[in-house]
Image (tube, rainbow, N blue to C red; front, side, top):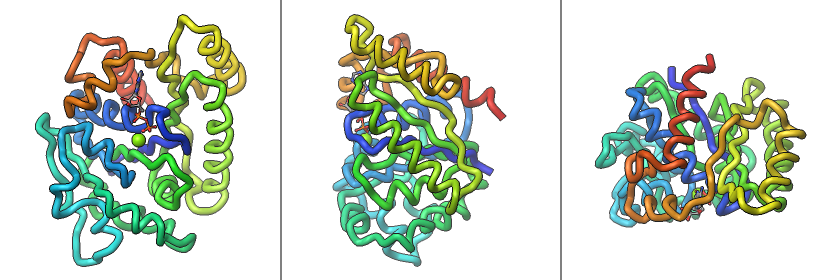
Length: 251
Ligand SMILES: Nc1ncnc2c1ncn2[C@@H]1O[C@H](COP(=O)(O)OP(=O)(O)O)[C@@H](O)[C@H]1O
Ligand SMILES: [Mg+2]
């Protein structure tokens, strides 16, 4: 049975996609059979592993709209060997029409493929979306990437509340794997202050490592490669490999 982990925060530009892509790539590199699921209509995770979503005939949206399509038919392999269930802009229509009663769909969709993988990593959309609730209902654990910026603190409180809600109803076993400080610019006082506050408030929920701010992350995604393959020696690569080790050590 796969360990299922969603990367969640209702805020764009917080490092969700970068974290999901690199964690999946790092687990793959460590010989774990890993599936990355792109659950964001913007398809940034799909693009970041070198796949053009517009060209796709089958993608994650089909699984919500056509019961005759099996998940196995939509899974692809990236150039570097990672399995991905790619996204497509059409997922935006599904997202817009989704009702509160449909938050258990993804859990059912994943059931038949769970035994095929060691890890399933889900990238989620930034907006308030039933797609994110679908992810929270389907996974065992959540990783929250947190930009070391005071505005991100509010988003963090919101996502923690949302997780509590899901635990009370849809998914009682849901657990927070950790909060990953990201885009940390150590030269600014604000980053330091925010980091100190987050660690003081959330203590052991905060991972004991962080991803520094670096333009290389954007370069890597434009090159269609996870940074752990694009620049293996980079600080960000080391941090994401450490995250994978940390996750492998738990349980
Ligand atoms: N550690 C980092 N330092 C600098 N830029 C980053 C870092 N991580 C991600 N980025 C860039 O910031 C932007 C937003 O990151 P992304 O992972 O797409 O966030 P989200 O999925 O939450 O919107 C992207 O252009 C990405 O390449
Ligand atoms: Mg994203």
